[in-house]
Length: 95
Image 1 (cartoon, rainbow, N blue to C red):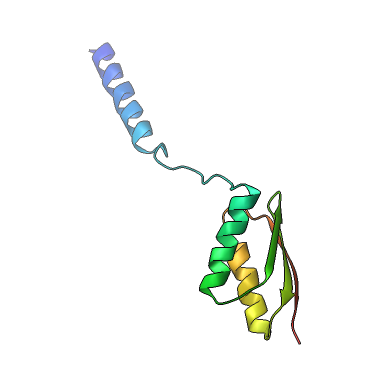
Image 2 (cartoon, one colour):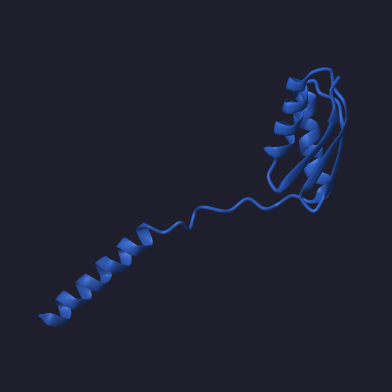
């Protein structure tokens, strides 16, 4: 009887631990430099912002000229939201 009860408890513990695992979740991979730059440029085009984008090991450098501080912030946000971006260096000039 003790062996049966022990087996049932162990089985229940195993099922409970498997049911609470995160096996189906994955961490997004970082993108390579070229793919990261392409994703940022897509975001910029969608916001009608045109600046130069350089990516090196997850560090994005934005350069160029934009008419407003709001556009400068949009460009920064468009770069920062891409997977794998570690830092955004914003060298965009605004009058």
